Amino acid sequence: MSGRRLWSVVRKEVAQLRRDRRTLVTMLTLPVVQLILYGYLSNEVLHQPTAVWDQSLTAESRALISALENTRYFSVRYRVRNLRDVQHLLDSGAAKVGVVIPRDYGERVRAGRTAAVLVVVDASDATSARVLLQVAQGLGVRVSQDLQVRALARRGQRPPGQPVEVRTRAWYNPDLRSQVFIVPGVLGAVMQFVTTFLTLGTIVRERELGTFEQLVVTPLRPVELMLGKLLPLVGLAYLNLTFILVVAWAWFGVTVKGSVVLLYALTFAFFFSSLGLGTLISTVSRTFLQAAQLAQLILLPSILLSGFLFPRESLPPLLQYVGLAIPLTYYVTVVRGIFIKGVGLEHLWPQVVALLMLGVVVFGVATVRFQKKLD
Image 1 (cartoon, rainbow, N blue to C red):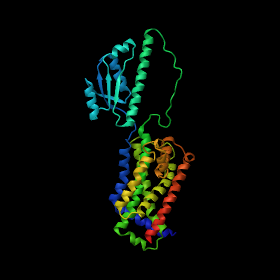
Image 2: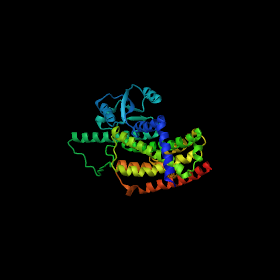
Image 3: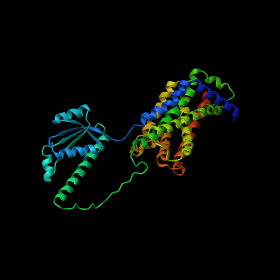
Image 4: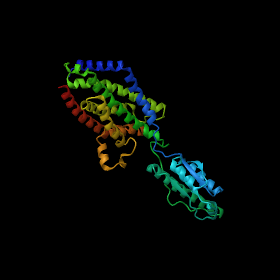
């Protein structure tokens, strides 16, 4: 491999990127915009609009409603006077939860008898509904315990000791901020998107413009031509990574707990596989539109199966195995390990090896097809 020939292709690609300033600005700003938008994705179910029909109108019912809002999962926005209004608000989507407090609620609570409260949840979103139902049931248990303690205190008795005390700790993210989980995942998803489409824009676009054939007649080898085109993209991708890290720190307050140098070093293994994937798509596509469609066919499953948004353990076993063929699956683990936990290579080397192996396979196939295209 001739270093002079390779360097000539690199200079040509850098000059072309500098001339196409609109594309360059888009590629530098789009990841930042995506990070800011997707960074607010949250799996928390908070402040759900709630309609309350309080037939009791007592201090006890008001205390229950206050306890409901104090959970932060429910936000009482509607006070209604009949069950039909509750149903109407749920049907229209204006409310996600309906609470019906019976007329004799206060009387039963003061008498120490069981008082039933109806909580209706819109289960169109099964995940949110499951959380809200669990919170409502837990609130019922807590309110009941408080009432029992007060009743015993009025009689001059002490409540029995708790047989089992569970003490919980939240490691790595003690404030339970969703951005701490989402932002590193967005970083990986955005970087895969950018590197794949950068490769498509470099190879397929040049073929459409007719300048690709001019390179074919040069004494460049296929490997030299491929590396010459991809090395500037690696530099641009690292620049994107730097911008994303700055925005994650300045906008969301999410900082890298581990080694930034290690993050940059291990990211190269991800670039190796993702750029290879973009090159492979370029070799099987005749137009940029066709290449973009194939890329979307790969990128969308990557987001769904990699663990970026949902735990992979919740997927069916077959889809978990499919996710093992996706580079983002391993890079998300690497990024979150360094970002959130601050771990080192001794914990992340299996993911790095998997990324390198995927890169070798994808680049090998892409090189063979690239050779055939040149021939």
